[in-house]
Length: 178
Image (cartoon, rainbow, N blue to C red):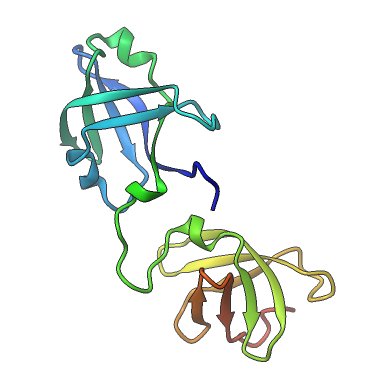
């Protein structure tokens, strides 16, 4: 794991009102975290380090969004400057998940192996389809002619997830490599 791993938990998408509040779209399954945080770290797009930290003076829910009042952001123009900023937390600030659940960043890079001992490739993405997640696998040379293998994350297919050991064990369904 890299020394400074930041995980996006929200994005400032708009100003709210005329007192400098900002509208946040949460990128977390735990939007309540914004009511427990003392401050937020803001990042520009793909910047590796935060461009600023702001104390949270107030937080409330408005429709599907979270409205934050940040210290020192007191006007629409102050808030407008923060639009498109990402709110990130460090890995050790993540909310704990129940046993058997993993964050996507924990799955990216894991090797996908079959119960018959074949090594298919590496997880490059996780698609969240609503019904079930789908692992996107970049296959190793010679495994398949496909550019990517899509593995449905369902109990009869994904048998073991072992992030500490670097792999996911799957039972392939008929036709998945065709």
